Amino acid sequence: MKGILKIAFKLLVNDKGKYAALLVGITFAVFLMVQMISIFSGILIKSSSTVINLGADMWVMDPAVNNVASSIPLPDYVLDAVRSIEGVNYAVPLYSGAALVKLRNGIFQPVTILGLDDHSLFGRPELIEGEIEDIYAENAFIVVQDAEVRKLGHPTVGTEFELNDHRGVIVGIAKVGASGLFGLPTLYTTYSKAIQYIPSPRFTISYILVEPKSPEAVTHIESEVRRLGYLALTKDEFMEKIANFYKYQTGLGTNILIMTAVSFLVGLSISGQTFYTFILENLEKFGALKAIGAKGRELIYMILFQAAFTALVGYGLGVGLCVLIIVLAKIRVPEYSATVTFTTLAFAFVMVLIIAAISSYIGIRKVLKIEPFDIFRG
Amino acid sequence: MDTAISAKELTKWFGEGDLRTYAVKEVSFDAYFGEILFVVGPSGSGKTTLLSMISGILRPDSGTVNVDHVDIWSLTPDQIAEFRLNKVGFVFQDYHLFPRLTTAENVAIPLILKKKDWNESIRDAEHYLDVVGLKNKAQLAPVKLSGGEQQRVAIARALVAQPDLLIFDEPTASLDGDTGRRIMEFVKNRILNDSRCILIVTHDSRIFEYADRIMRMEDGKTVGIEKRADH
Ligand SMILES: Nc1ncnc2c1ncn2[C@@H]1O[C@H](COP(=O)(O)OP(=O)(O)OP(=O)(O)O)[C@@H](O)[C@H]1O
Ligand SMILES: [Mg+2]
Picture 1 (cartoon, helix red, strand yellow):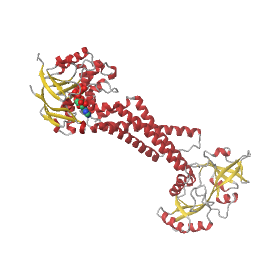
Picture 2: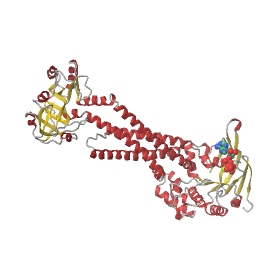
Picture 3: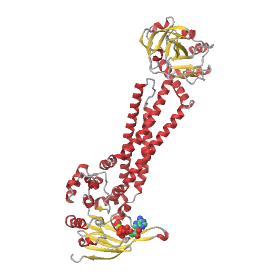
Picture 4: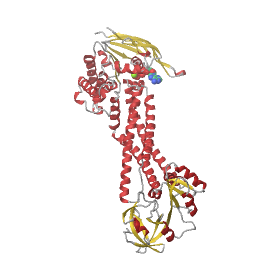
């Protein structure tokens, strides 16, 4: 067995031109598929950045919300009602909205404002400079050190600015896990200051962040909130809802899907075609092997081995190239969002196996059909 | 002499309906260990078809073939493949060497198919390349060799698994007269032995002198087997 696979290997890689063409086809397909899906995964993670960064176990919201940035204010009684649901450890309001900052040099910059519950500061970020208590000081804001912070002119503790015609001052610098999708810097402040600085409609609570007493309480809380006419979601459910919004309601997902299918087809046709020519060119030789006494099964193993080996090498090259490009792009463009997930890698792997399977199926059919007699007759 | 091959009433048809004709019709003959039997006849007379049925490559429509007292067409397809691998050495008219493998690797193929260890197979292959006088060409690609040398590589590949039966189809057709004779000289003196039977199809009357017996075919039938006078 090992011996004939070694022959198959030599037939494949010694034919350098064809082997290179095969690898190019598969590498190209893998690269495009992984790249495309990774960019989309990156966008999805960014679109849920607030949910990830605040870290609350459960979120209560208006049922019409489909995206964390476009919140729909909740009346104050909902907060009290949620607090009185059995199984709720605590529930706090969150303000999430946009404001306009005027920098010292006169330039305007839109920002995202997150107002944390005054008593608990639940969801507060990790500070790399300053003290969290300073957030209670007059006009105090904490700025997030992410890819967008340079748009505020790299503020430091003590930097002053105007926010919707109020004075603002930076009292701390925070770091967070994920940065946002819309390219806006983020400022944290307290809930009460946020609603005081930012003109609001009648209701001011954007979300209610809930900590259940135990994981078992989650379903009960969800159904009680539903009876109130509102929606409670766990962190993962909320992220999935946001992802679904971008996947199915913005056209983004469909486009990525189409591009992925096109990459797959292009890769399949290049590799399938090349593999087919490779088999055709060696067909007489496979026939001679058959005449000498190779069994059909052994020829199948040889072809499967050649296809699988090419697929694996092409897969490795494609993924490697993709990671390289993403790393390079991230060095040049800090906001560049692309995340290679295991699901993406597994998906691309399955697609490559399908390419290999189709290519070898065509080859195997050809090889099984040759009659040694025709080879013998010449 | 021991009977190597016993063919009885071999018949092969080709085509369908009105186009249906026989390539070989009711051919019977015996061949013996230790002899070189030539099969000669005009083009289309059924020589290749006959040899294919004898060597386990083409199933006859009727008739039987016994090789070394085994009725080969009663075996399963896998057993027939085993039979070809273990008992028969083929030299095809256009050699069918793998251009991407070295000469030694080409020669080693039957042993590798027999699951012999790779390095041992290559060593045996080099021995047989030595036998056919190509010891120093073992690492070259076959395309770097002349026609006569490629023919000898094909012969080494046919010999490497030490088959009882050697089948040559037009071994000298694409060689010049001298090279052809040298190959036949070599086959007769170095390859033929008492436990081997060699069947050669040829048009080439220049090499008839190397036959022990000559079987003539016409229109799918044998028209007689003659022993060569000096044998
Ligand atoms: N696969 C096939 N389908 C149809 N007819 C065939 C097939 N193989 C052989 N024949 C026919 O059978 C007859 C014998 O063919 P075969 O190849 O055995 O002749 P041959 O004596 O070897 O000829 P040559 O000297 O030209 O090689 C020919 O008429 C040929 O056309
Ligand atoms: Mg012929």
